[in-house]
Amino acid sequence: MKKLLTSVGISAVLFSATGLQTVAAHDTHYDSNECEVSLNYDVTVEPKKLIVSEVGDEKYRIEMDKLFVNDQQVSLNSQQQALVNQYSASVSAQVPEVITLVNDAVSIASTAVSLALTPLLGDSAGAQIDEMLAGLEERIEKVAHQHGDTFYLGATESSLEDAFGEEFEQEMEQLVQNSLGSMMMSLGAQMMSGDGDSFEQKMESFSAKMDSVGEEIEMQIEQQANDLEARGEVLCDNFKSLVVLESQLRKEIPELANYPLVETSSKLLE
Image 1: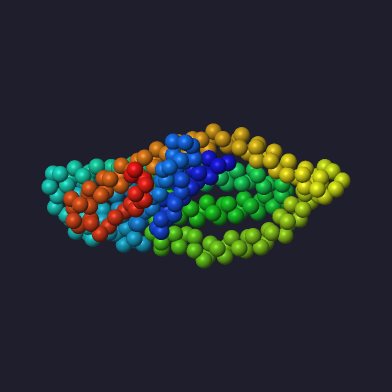
Image 2: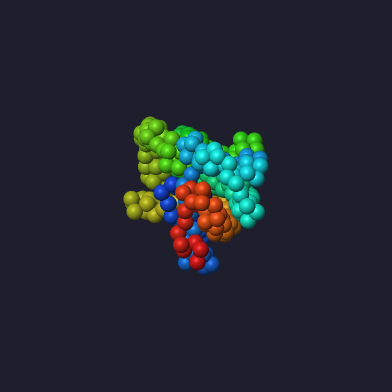
């Protein structure tokens, strides 16, 4: 399960406007390398257009190889133009990859949670868990989605607050309150129905059952989790290149100096 959670973390960290941190991978190759990436602005990718904005307020866009900052076209020399083209192509390629990875990770994680808890808590509680997970997926859709040829990745604090703010918290709290009783009853029944006469024996039986469920889930999703982890590692490497490229872009084009899209730890570049 660790690899699956790692991949989910890789995806989720890209939504953070405050710099959430995650480890890119837990194998020996990445033990000392943290993939800490956050985005300061919302990003929209359309055919031949890249838009960087904050709560609908466009900061800059690259459209048909032309750069507009605060809706004013910026005159570019040949070197600047080459950087703009390269940067636009890089971001436009990576944003869809992030969105796909996020959606795949959430889907697999939801399946894993459902597979883990439904056998223990029963179909009724499982249905309530599925309802909570569906609500989570719907909220994630607000900040990471594809509509036709348009990709949107919301990363500003306001975008995240709109998706996961007080309303979402209230919805989740209500669902938990409505389902907690039946879940606890089902869990208690599972514990007491374990093999053995004494309470300790029943707890040992229940613990063994939990271990068996975990192993079964891991077997079912291991390949998908490995795939997500590999894709996350590639994404992290791509962002290393993007960080360097954006730094050069902002130095060469003063109009972009105040609009850093990507924030990262210095460890990412080591």
